[in-house]
Amino acid sequence: MKYRLYEDDGISREYKKGVNATTLINLIGKESIQINAVLGNYKGMLMQRNYTLYIHLGKKPESVWVNGVEISHWDYTTAKLGVLTVQCGRGR
Image 1 (cartoon, rainbow, N blue to C red):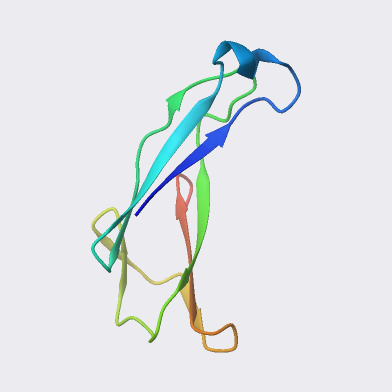
Image 2 (cartoon, rainbow, N blue to C red):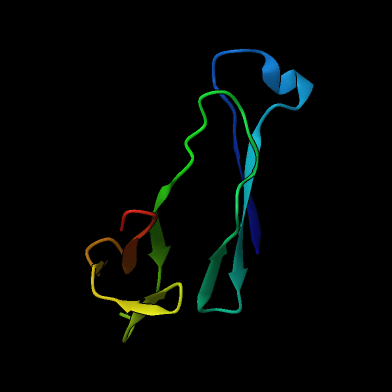
């Protein structure tokens, strides 16, 4: 499954000229999510990003990895029908 995150300045009409940025997010198999580099730019765009992922799972994972490193700052709750919450990005 693929998702394309679209963003622009939210103010001007520059998006009509193709001034925007997109980020491709892929689900790889059943266990990996890949957030690709941002393509494009616009005035006022953030150069660094943090993401919070809410992932619906049937059971609590044994471990969570970001960029090849096991992380400890994640949460899994059954109160929300089995949702894994992961915060990642620069500055995390």
